[in-house]
Length: 98
Image 1 (cartoon, rainbow, N blue to C red):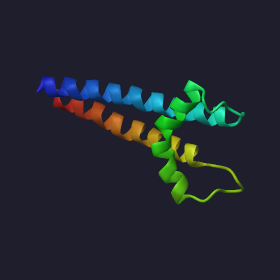
Image 2: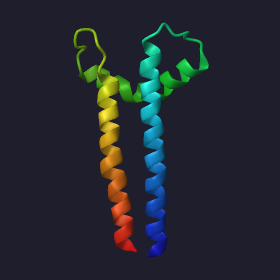
Image 3: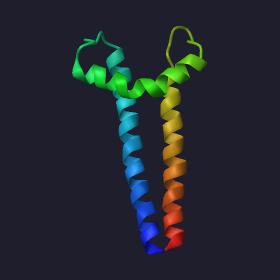
Image 4: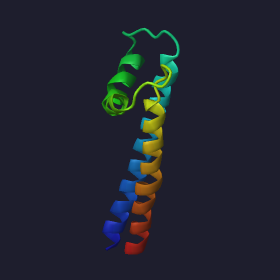
């Protein structure tokens, strides 16, 4: 059973890192959007390509409040919840299996 516990622990660590990186990409995209970015810049295109599949459905469901797009904030809250709930649950499960 220790193999399953180690697998769950490793998976939880990788998931924690991936979610943290994705949150930072959302933050970077939001900060870049405040200036007039070059649409052909690699960083701008990369951040838009990565985050748009997550932000678009949120933006579609929520109306713009006073012209402010709050979809990045909603996405960050959702990913923070996943990070705290799912990753922590996987770590706890791996400890109980040992």
